[in-house]
Image 1 (cartoon, rainbow, N blue to C red):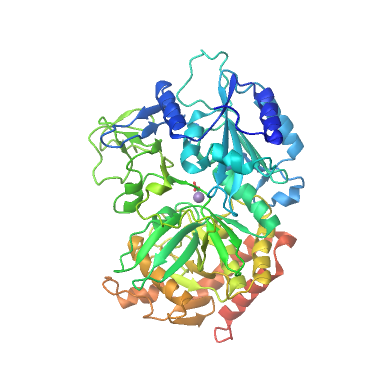
Image 2: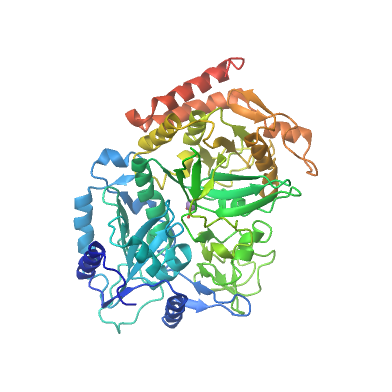
Length: 604
Ligand code: OXD
Ligand code: MN
């Protein structure tokens, strides 16, 4: 496509980067279907993609990465703020100038023999007052076609940007130049020795080098929509959070919107697309990973999903765990690092009860059942358009967003944390989110797994000091009317009994907990005060038709004061990391919690 912009700042930047990276040519992406088809065909020709069987999975592609490039690389991810203290204790920091000097040497000539694509993208519906524009420069056609699905891409974005300088500048290279355009390429070029994912919050820039995979390379997602956007949100008084957004409708037609933060591997995508077990209740999806939220004139918090697709973990996704995800990816999808069948369809662990007789695994080897090897890499992914989701809410692209009624926090905990707990107010809810914890999966029966505290599930994604981030949450509570802010809940689907058996069935049955939350937001359901927050009264959660005895329900809602008192020193230790940046309000909340645990009759 010809250059479709007169934005001189953008043109100058593209020229400057092209001079450094020395691609053979520069291609401006227009975001059209024709461009997508042209590029997927080229990826098939170059051996990066295999076209799946059109009769089984139309217009879909299979791809295997280099085994050295399979996931986000947190140890090589940097927040290069001007001052080290602004990156905080939970991010890697490097001086921005030193990091750029080092990277310039790597970028020098790194696109030789390749094209440099200019991808104009909008995070959020184009033109929405909550959306933001970014431009990604990349030498990876795989990135271009994935960005087509994950964001709104193309000429319309340039039109909306006009001559504004307000865009995030993202530079990405796989770091694998070809000496001539004719040099044979490999299916997944990357740089095995050097991978850097670097962020410059003050100048709203991202420089990523060496990896072509997921969040390292699709810069709109974690790099822009969370790390850079969290800084913008702090500066401008809004919120960029690692949250799914769902719509819940009661049998009477009343609607509420819930946003929920869970660390990776806690079933976020499953919850966002859940088929509720409760008759007459409806759950629809707005987003499965990220929420951008701004205050409306009515004082309420409005959320959009900045993304346009789902980049979901494939293994474990099935008609049993997430039927709506399975239906979403029936066509027009890209599958990376799962296995392929001889018929030309994909497969991954748990996708069906029986493993197909013959597969070719993610490492290109033949695989038969019983070999003891897994077919898909555990971080194998599908990239699929959100609009194909059969339960996508009709307002998912509403530019003004949806008014959030409740926030959920949660993690995987075998003990201590009850099924659901309502915060007393915003600051108490902020406290609950700040000490959010999850266990390493597959904790042995009866044994407590290793607990990692991950405030608001933002640990790998906050672009500034986590103490300042928590202060931003507290400030929102100070500046806004508590009655209009979302109510905050802490949930745990993963509590186990003494024999290590799950107490709660999870999946579609989680709708029962969502119903209680819905009714609480509507001012109807019953709750009782406890030292840790407001819990459902014994029969206020609807368990009709569920094979769950009263003893198990009691266990699920148990608040064991001893267990909680054993937990508070770890919360204290977690807080110490943030030093003086930790807001006093949260120290106060932890002290009050300890006080209430020691003297449960104490007024809450
Ligand atoms: C993701 C993650 O990939 O949270 O969404 O790790
Ligand atoms: Mn995520």
